[in-house]
Structures are given as C-alpha cells and as structure tokens.
Image (tube, rainbow, N blue to C red):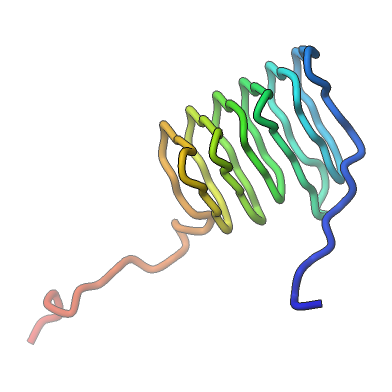
Length: 131
C-alpha cells in the first residue's frame, strides 16, 4: 500500500559486548549492537536491512539494501536502496547511496555520492553552446 515495500525480518543480532573479527555476510536483516572488525555484506539480490545501532562500531566495508546507521563506521558504505544516517552516526569513509536520509548531527568524513552518478550525463551550461 502507498508504494512502500515490506521490510525483511531481522534474523541476526550481534549483541552489545560482542566482538566479531572477519567478514560478516547476511541475508534478510542484521542488527549490530556490538563491534565488527571486517566487512559486513548483504548477500543475494533480495531486499535486505542492516541496522548499526548507536552502541555499535564497524571497521570495514558496509554493503546492503536498506542501511540504517546510528553508530560508528570506519570504512566505505554502499546502500542500494535507502541509507538512513541517524543523529549519532559517525562515518569515516566514502558513501554511495540510491536514496539518502540524513538527520541533523550525523557526520561523514569522506565523499558522498549517489549510485549511478557516473552514468548520468554531465551538466551542460547553455552559455557553452556555440552560436
């Protein structure tokens, strides 16, 4: 209804006080309240949701469909659906997104670019046309 897609269920939780070292791959949904040192990647072509809570810290690449960040990420982020940067989000790395929602207080130390920007035609000023 109203064009909104149903979110996949969050099936996995990295709890507060937990440290994972290495690559973390998931399907459907993942919530991180602890710390991950390694890449976090959504698998498959289906919808996915990744929540990085206020208490969480991720050091590595982050990739998913719907990505919600309210903690710290040290590494690049790629979101193929919606990237939500909540007020306590702190990102040190380049950010690529399809749709971006950024709240006041969120910080990014890196390049912020929409996906597909390379395929979009460049801006051509009318004054540059001959004649």
